[in-house]
Image (cartoon, rainbow over all chains, first blue to last red; front, side):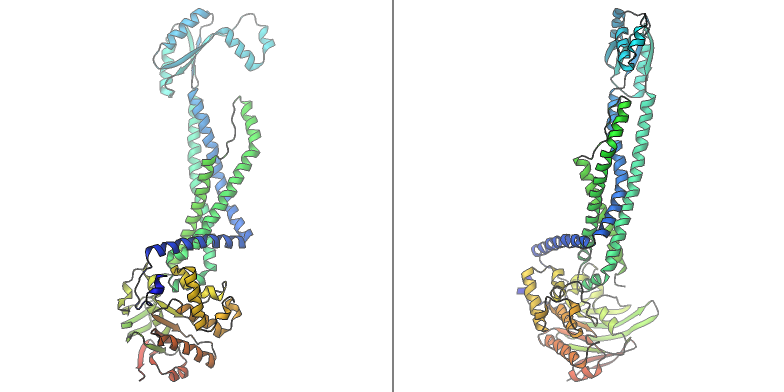
Length: 324
Length: 222
């Protein structure tokens, strides 16, 4: 509009349109390119779907691993909470003495709380856990010792170990058991899993970049003449790039949505056997689903990766066609 | 408007496309650029459009040393120049209207304003009634006129044409040249590269003649 009222520009000045008009034109072109790139995608539905599927497959593995690890971390935190020591008292210690010993243990520094399991209670639990009611009923004496379950204030392995040493010096305590080894093992495994997931995430992210980059490179090749012409008549690099960046973003978003669908389906499909397996170990573990946060992260990162892949592909082309 | 100062252009360090070219074109002038094919006409035009950079010397357009343009400024520089190509360079996936509207779209001209200017340009080249057609439905001469409409839709101060009548019969060629003369008459500086010597001779404009990359004649017509 501003151009109209002004006389036709006389010189080869490098003037740019005024800010407000430029911004509106910019927004309009963005809107047009969002639609145009979507239309181009839909014009080749099968090819577009294949690209998106390739992206989805590349995303599913790291996303699925991450999801599993995430829920494993929840489990880990729960286990850490429940890191306990069990002090078995000598067999034959009576209930009242057991109570005194419990108080002695509870009075030690670094103890959060204690719970006394008398010999009779121990037997009852044993019954329930093993379902050996009949066999155990035949025993005359209760062979089980009373025990005190202690929850330490500090669940770090070092602290727990020190606590156990002090307990063993308490008279009436026969043996202190602490199950730390498997907890540590689990923690190492979790860390290993996290690193593997990170490495896979980086690799497969690169894979997505390559898939999108290659697709966009072909699109650029197909529109080479158009790019040449619009560059000749004054299109900026940003203008040339725009439709391709949106195509890349669409591919990424589509791939992300497909990955989301695959993850949800997969999680549904696997959830029954996983829950059954966990239940057989007496644990309750459910395969997690992508929540709102996880879905948002997945879709945003896949869209961003698509956009970035397109950026790299178009920029390579533009760099090759600089004036010499 | 255009000044070449001892300009040379080599490709690959060996082939000398242009050597010691020195001339000036005044604002509002119409100039023909002739010479056998390979004489350097296209190279010269490409230098003005800043598609290439001179190996030696300076190219000034409207007083600016265009070598000094930062590459982010080049698009804005090119918007001041209308270019007509021998092979039209139309985009075949869109209508005549949208081909002509392309420069305005790039500059972000508002739709209604763009429509007005596109129709004015198409009217000027006599193709207003074909605005909805695809380029493929047009004859060679009509396609070239669309190319010209696209070059002038932005009212450029400088109009360059590279062999605009290359594939056209004499009558169509004369029509096209008459169009350029019309634009020149309203103040546009026009430079047309052509090897159609007969046509050029009839039109009586200043003519720069290239031979093997050298400027061998600069004939003003009184």
